[in-house]
Amino acid sequence: MSFGGSTEPAAHVEFSSIGGFTNNSVVAKELTEAISKHIKVSSDRFYIKFTDLSAKEIAYRGNTFG
Image 1 (cartoon, rainbow, N blue to C red):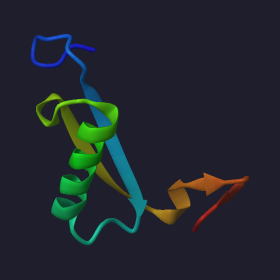
Image 2: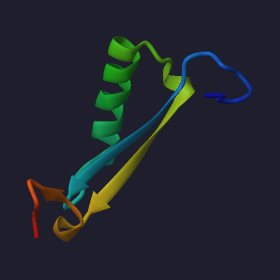
Image 3: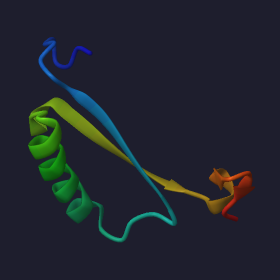
C-alpha cells in the first residue's frame, strides 16, 4: 500500500456501528492510540472512516438486526 508517496507501513481503517456514534472525536482518538501502539502504524499514515449503519444492512447467522 502506498500512502503519501511512501510504502512505509500504512492502513485504511473502517469503523462501523448500527445507530452511529455519539462522539466520533473520542472514538477517533482512542482508535488512533490503539492502532499506533498495537499495529505499529504511525498516526499520520492512516485514515479512519466512520460509517453509521442501518440495522437492516447487517446480518449475523442468516438474520439481519433490523
